[in-house]
Image (tube, rainbow, N blue to C red; front, side, top):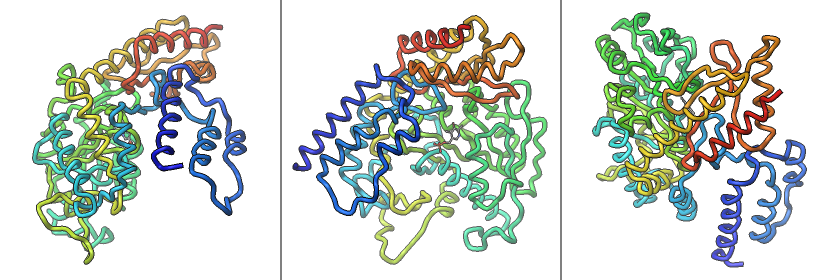
Length: 457
Ligand SMILES: *Cc1c(COP(=O)(O)O)cnc(C)c1O
């Protein structure tokens, strides 16, 4: 079979899968043992025809795929893929450019350069900020916080890239206490250790409590803020926090893995007020922008610090022209040209389309929370600020945690829709997250109906 025929055949498989998302169960129907049975075989000693590999792969994963790409999935914060982004992702694999530097993929480098500028414009970030395309917000945090570490220590006469951290002035990373665990891991990976992470606490509005911030100019300090808290979708008070932090020489980092996209909608202007005053920001492409995994972004106001933290050189590199070499900004060397699907998504949707998608998801989240929350025995814990909300289910015997987990399991078992559980303020809750471009009012109605059935009796 020619490669052209193989790819056409694969496209037909892909089309079948995508069409099935609307009707097939969202929840996987095959269990661990079944999947190990279907996929497990001894190491192939000899090869086989490519088309058979593909046909058998499609057959063997049957029942083992989570329908998170469709419109009825509301678990975690997992986006789908808009059509142009998916198609461009296929081309990215086909072209197979090593997007490490301009010389090994000129068009890929230029697309990344242009897409980075677009993203800053969309998100309302300073035009002069530097950027990096990473695997996700996790590595975007590492990148941005490495820039922070460089700057804060360089200002105190310490060259961390050369001297390391053993004798360095101790750094602190302040956060609200409900930060995403990827911040903790970034702090670990950067050698600061989680003892350096100090939970300041949050106020009654769930925002970081600025009255409890103890900032000292002689201690190198990063303040981590959130644009979109994982349970509530809440936002910190950026303008006030940045003003305070900067008065004391601290670096402000914003985790906006999904919430930063609220900046695209004028509806949420008040939530993101002062966001642009921070020093670094991270967000994802694979969540709310709906590009395929994996895709995250770091932005850094102090481009020199970012570059100093990440750049590398070797005798065989061809660098140094006016082109933007990606390896000066990223934690990776060889890498996928992951800006290409992002470029395609932004072109397909445009600023208007992205704004409409963000607002639509938020409307659906509100309708889901209110619809499920008004079922008998259900209770709304958090009305969405943007696209995330929490409900729980009450038990006659008072064991609401058990009841809530039970209803979540039943809902998942229907296959009609998928919600996950979380613990919020010591209570088990069902988390509702809407980030998929495909979700319709009909999907919302089906999901509420599935919850009604699952919480009945
Ligand atoms: C998902 C998420 C992250 C981690 O992002 P990845 O892209 O999975 O690395 C960090 N912070 C928040 C708020 C998130 O929702």
